[in-house]
Amino acid sequence: MKHPLTLDALEVLDAIDRKGSFAAAANSLYRVPSAITYSIRKLEEDLGVVVFRREGRRSVLTTAGQVLLEQGRELLEAAGRLAETTRQVDSGWESELNIGIDSILEFDPYYRLINQLYAENPDIEINLHEEVLGGTWEAIISGRVDLALGAGDPPTNTQGHRYVRMHWVQWVFAVAPEHELAQCTQPVKPQDIECFRAVVVRDSSRDFAPLSQRLFSKHSLLTVPNLKEKIRAQQMGLGVGFLPRHRIAHQLADRSLIEIPLENGTADTPVYMVRKSDRNGRALRWFIDALKSDFSH
View 1 (cartoon, rainbow, N blue to C red):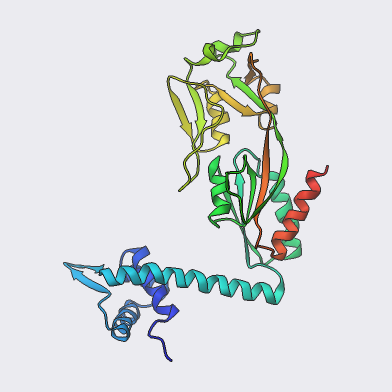
View 2 (cartoon, rainbow, N blue to C red):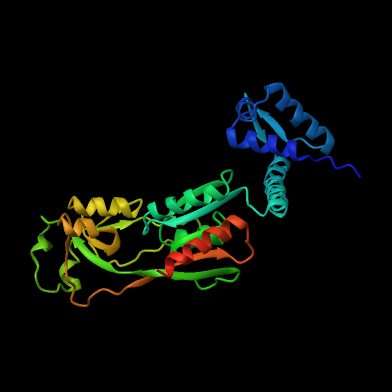
């Protein structure tokens, strides 16, 4: 039985929607506009439906076209997964590896590992994603990444995922040397710092409820995109907040940030490496084994 749908037609439909026009889709697919028009007309004829209708100078998806687009994308994704699985079965190596790294970690150690992985397989495509707070767990649960590094405490449901503790993070409450709190020599009570602006990092979650960690009840907040910018903002005296000691060792040493003792102290927190249980490609296994060797040192 011959099916009226083809992956090529679905790719054309997807490109038109993503790029906003037939001409832009043609450019992205390296085709002439007439070829794009022909593909859509052929698709409509084969299905016996109208996929696009004209509204002035624009072509707009019909209701049937919208359903075809949404479910067609699921078919394209499934076809991509099938092709990837086939390549893995043949060679054992994934064609690409997606790694999510929480901003609490520095990237440099992973660049060194990636360089070693390239020596094993120079053709693999590696994509690094910076994530923050709940976004790190969301990235692995949603499938955006194959491996998540530096994830915080696991959510309630981690079924289908394996995680192992990487290390513990020691937190420091830090301010700029010119900040009013920098002169404190005695442990500070939470109520003594509630009136000062806090610098916080924006959660990178797309669908999960955003998280906030280590906040007092503040009058105002300055929200930044990642930990690097949080450190910079606190150095500039724009606010106060907790920072991981391993990320500000240099700033504490040169006193561009001052550690403020707290009456109740600070608790260390663990960070985790997480992967999906059903993903077992050769590159992923190589990376995990290399990281576990580092954990043991």
